Image (cartoon, rainbow, N blue to C red; front, side, top):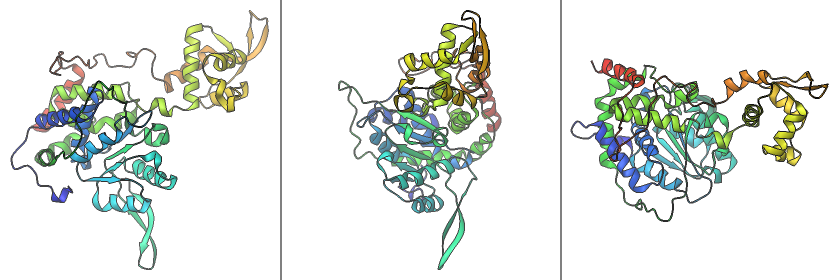
Length: 405
């Protein structure tokens, strides 16, 4: 159902009740971790009011192999999202024109099976449509010739694909990745057929219209998010976290914890060689705890014990390649004296890695960069928190109360 055909619910609605209904539906039809249902429900709500926010995250639905429920989850989104546009093979011109005219929620299945031309077109729309007010310039047909034209591609987008490594880092850094797993045979979910989401869609539309001014005001406030997240990750989660403040502390807590769980959700599929190198070296340095290492020692460990033997067509990493990769992080080899060997060798001081480890890697201690008070995910049998709301989220509560007054 297109938005222009959708009429708001005929009486005021309670946001918590809407979200709870979306979560209940999600759990009936989709096998996935409990916290993901909360994000799905909040993202559905976002499709009705995303225009008020600076950023609109991309949802990636991935899996290690086929048959893990990606299409089912995409179909669920189609039932409840605002103005859905389900796409298969498509062209760049169709995507840009549709985004400009209809401003839909794009739902794209089997991204990895599409021709490269379609993939590139889709990624252009995904990346350019992440931030509001960033139109894309293209030449378009005008009379008998071509003329420059801008297209507004900002809006919600959900893409299903096997493995996030089909996307470049520009896309994954703007995304929330649900990496689905095939459900055990002992678990059953209902078949998603003839599911009518009209009532909940109308309720979402009514709530967003009734609260439009409050949403606009709060959307301009920099909401508190976990310190573990980078600036880009906080941008990605900001709209969902902001909307959660309208639903009370329980929902704030749920989205906070989901952000902590999923903010690096593309990492395993898209990690670069340089970052992998830093991770492996940090692990080795922490185990050996020496103050200096020869280049020969490091490449021997990497090739024999850290899986780098298959690097460079199974040649392994060389001293020269090690130096080249580390140079990108401003780490350079030196001629160092090794007393136990009685000789000078090219290598690295352990302290020379400290800045790169801090700057580019998640901390080894999960509490190292965390706020003094974190958001525990303790719930009772009814799914309600067993802990009181914490100091961090009270900052957000003050924002929403100020907006309400």
